[in-house]
Length: 337
Image 1: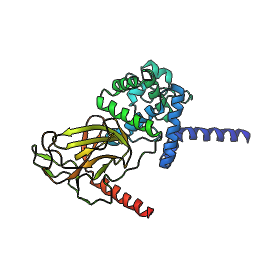
Image 2: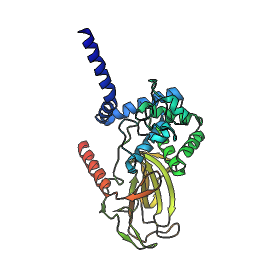
Image 3: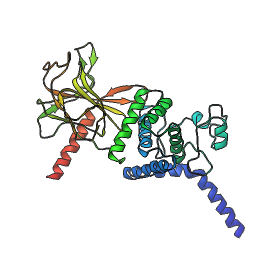
Image 4: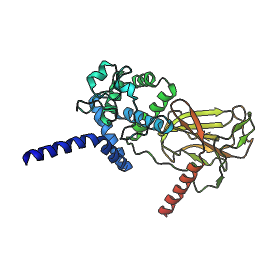
């Protein structure tokens, strides 16, 4: 009887091990957003304690890669908490005949990057701790200064824009000291008179044949323009099409473009970290000419959104997002009454 019990216990253990990854992935999918943030931050801080790489650097890379998974069709959606992606060849080594290899020793022999991050003797490409530890060790090998971080990112991604986006994410996390930064808001105060409709894709004539890559929100001169998301000011200045314009990169790798401004909010510069509702400029009618050109059209805010996929970026229709943020803003205002 005792022998039968031992056999059953052994079989149960084997079945648990075989199905554990699937179960863990399911458990991760069932977590609330707040729980995911909490558990991710715990992982970042754990790896910071082990490698001395600041947690906000790890969060920035993970966030950037999460955006890539959404934008690149050849990347699978993450099953766990960490979105950093290593291809099988990267993980086990380009000449390793076993693409499912989890032995740290053989992976090292084939010049694979995969490491054991949780001390179980296995380097699993689908394990959150192993993946995060592997990338943290990579960053650690370059040093701990900001310049070291940028060099490490350049060597890994071979793209300056990727380096800039991740560095911006790190500054946002460092500033707010939390991962819970998903809020958005409508770009104009609700108490001002404004109007807009879906204009993305409409034909434009000035400057050659092109399409309208945004939504025009008509309002009076000098109505405050607000950041719609948490992010960092990536560009500020004059553009012959958009006039005085400002661009903010959010944590979803999306670039928010605010154009035709009459001016900028004092203190807002390239590199400024912003939160939803922060005033960044004012409605105007600048653009369609040399610096300072004004009044070639009625005052309005041209608002555009562009998604980066790690290679390039493209515009998409911001109208649905604007309607959603406007509706939410009205609901919140109603609650306060």
